[in-house]
Each structure stands twice: as structure tokens, then as C-alpha cells.
Image 1 (cartoon, rainbow, N blue to C red):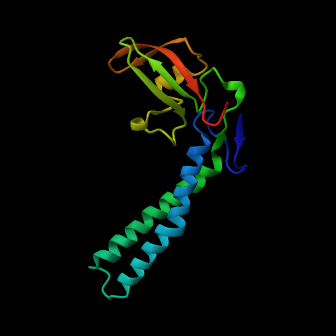
Image 2: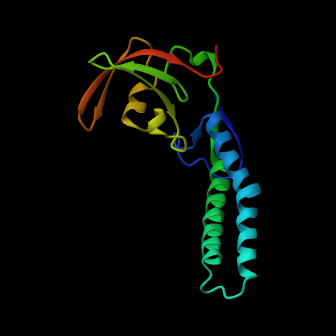
Image 3: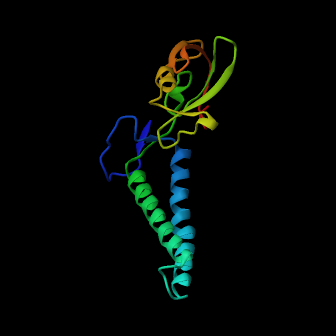
Length: 172
């Protein structure tokens, strides 16, 4: 079930604005860290560097101002993004089928198993096997159940996978 986090901003794309509760918390923590810790620290460094005099050749001042711009740009992005994201909480009705947020274990033709979590674009992390709902594998898995076969077009050719297991965090 999707839960609107904020009424600000337009919902721009059916899939692109979805996020798991854990993903939303991670972005919110990053924003909080930048605002409460990182920005005040860098602001103080810039202030200290400016007090030393000539700013034109002061590397600490120049770097600090650049870092402040980066932080402010990221804070702006996060503020806008968090406003339009829709937190999707898995429900018991979804058990047995792969939907947004599911951890899906698949087995390929050689018997190799891999578990992927289907997430939104803000959470994609290939090294942790969090794949986009918009990726070929993510799209192929949507709505599938255990025992179903999926065909996925990939760079090294089409792959055939069997859905072995589906689970959701916090749902029993």
C-alpha cells in the first residue's frame, strides 16, 4: 500500500517516486546530517579561513566555499525529493508475489542463485543487489510468484530465471 509522505509537489511518475521506508529514512538521515553537522562545521571552517586575511589565495577558504555550495545543492535536492516521494509499505496481501520492496531470490540456468530487492531509483545499489523497479530484471519480476519463470534481456543475452523465494521486511 502506498502512503503519500507529503502533499507538496506533483507525483511525476508512477514508479519513479516510490521508495521503501528504509530508503526514505536513509535520505532523511543524510539531510539531517548535512544540515545539523556537516554544514555548520564547514561554515565554521570558512569563517576561520576568512579571518586569516587574503581570501584569493586561501585554499581553505576557497575549498570551504566550494564545499558549502555542494552541501547546499544536495540539501536542495533532498528537500525537493523527500517532498514528492511516496513511501511504499508492504502488506500481508502481497505475500507470495513480487512487488515493490520485495526481496526476490532467483535461480539461473546454471543453478546460481541471487537475491534482489526491488526498489525505486533513489535506492538502487548494485553491490547490495538493490535493483530498480524500472530495470529489466525489476520489471520482469513484478507480479511473479514462487516457481514462475522470467526471461530477462541483458547485455550478455537473454537469461531465464526461476523465482525461488519472495519475502518482505516486516511482513508475516
